[in-house]
Image 1 (cartoon, protein in one colour):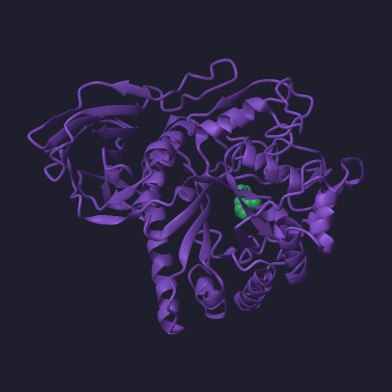
Image 2: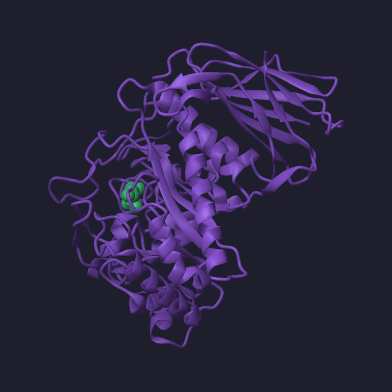
Length: 498
Ligand code: AHR
């Protein structure tokens, strides 16, 4: 029997906030230096940013970009990164054991962000700094003029305020690895007081507090619960993070990793709503899933052994299987679009990233680029509730009842089309799928785009940048209100009906 997807136009999950398709630029590895910024590169613009990278970033479709960290932010002195470049200090970044010469800082990043068509999500340092530094940074970025920090910005050549709306109150403060790690009580109080103070400078901010750095960290959910007890009224979003990898030979479990993301999101929603009820709050706090991806810690260095500028850290050369999982993680985010309002694929270039560059050389798309770019382009609108009926397979992680099919459907903003994103997790068998379209009598034409390959290990290199690309396939059809399609083994699919 074919797998089935049932949906109905009146049965909706919620509208997709385009900021669900964000990404993340951290001063980590070669994300900034020789990634987005390389003044000596032949394509560099007047500000020293690579034109070839910028073009790929625009194509990827990332409406929001988180900056400057990550772990980096927890010991970052933001004042180091402003003013004349030749006067900026060279610092040791202890967290990543790299050399930071501050040639890119707040102003350069924020103006580049606008040039690539994104808004910024800035993080403040609540590790070894605190409320005053956060207030100063908001004043520097957002206040028009007539005060110390806003006039300094103007003197530095940025007359107009950067007008940054979204701010993270620190990064992964639950993590013992974090500079300035705090208990949930300490952080909850600090987040509340810093949020309050930042809004005194600019009342229009959207603020994000730190949730758990990983679903399986021991303090997950109790951390959130206590942090929210102190900060619920002051924040708009709770940040959560998750990275997945194939462990050993166990590809079957890895291919179903999105189940873990589903469960994480649903447990966080329950935790948020418990905090709302317990505190008798009226407003609803939503989720910013502002770090997620597949991440292999053994690709290059994770933290450098010595202090060098732009070391090759976490340069994962993703393959087809990784791209299918990334596509599936996007399906998970979309399925929860009512509560997950922002997301950041971590990261953007070179380190844990869909875009790879070589210093002085090429920039190209890794396989994970493709499901992301297509979902960002076609996953905007309203998510429809789907009832997915699927054959099952056995995995070590999720047991004998692991669904082979995962899917989500999005009705376009203009109502003229519905796009179904679907993953076939089976490594062996193609999966026939039927989608019940009787609620959409006007939609009769279908197209199918597939990311799959005979070699699931295939990747893209500078020499063969288009070895792995999505393909349009024929064969899908709509007949009597039913869409029928065949999903190849280990594949990510996009079916659009018009
Ligand atoms: O994205 C890489 C790192 O992963 C980030 O710096 C940190 O927040 C997370 O642990």
